[in-house]
Length: 254
Image (cartoon, rainbow, N blue to C red; front, side, top):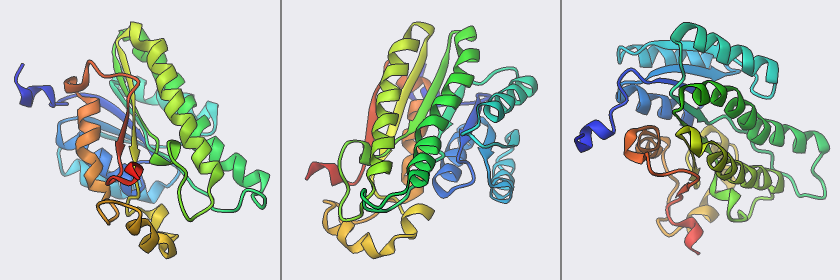
């Protein structure tokens, strides 16, 4: 198999959560550009429809699945729908995530629960539901979007709940990789640093400080994660599992 063929995803059936967001959209485009069909999963219907239009211009099959990933019932229904139409799921990318910024002593229980439910419980529910079909077929690729915040404590913003949830994603990834390796399912995570996304644009007051603390002195672009997701979704990464791939412009070096 040539190197080019290693990265091909032609006719692969994929599910991408958080598909309506800036990062999610770029990950969908990356998979579609390499030949994959995409089931878009999000709670934002209009955003998904906009992404779907771009994917269809690439002549890919697209499904729109409005789903609350914190609901086990909705996740199971979504997976059942995709399997009913396509027969299999080869790739799962868990990209949905939220953040809440507040000092720990002032953080509400509701804010804590929302972050944990979306960022960690939602990933678990999607992994569990999709992996059942992957186990039956003895193959699959799962990619969880974690964060450098799962390995370092960000400054200057207070975000203990977000950090804890992303650390949980990294450990969940490793745990599932260990459990499912015998089924030929690769489970890995990508940990972006500061990316110019909808989330980070809400706290632009921190940007100058972030750049000072980053060796490359800039925020990343969502499109700069495309190569990583293609690698982890393709046969090129078949020997890699349980790995957290840090893409942070060097932030975690200091």
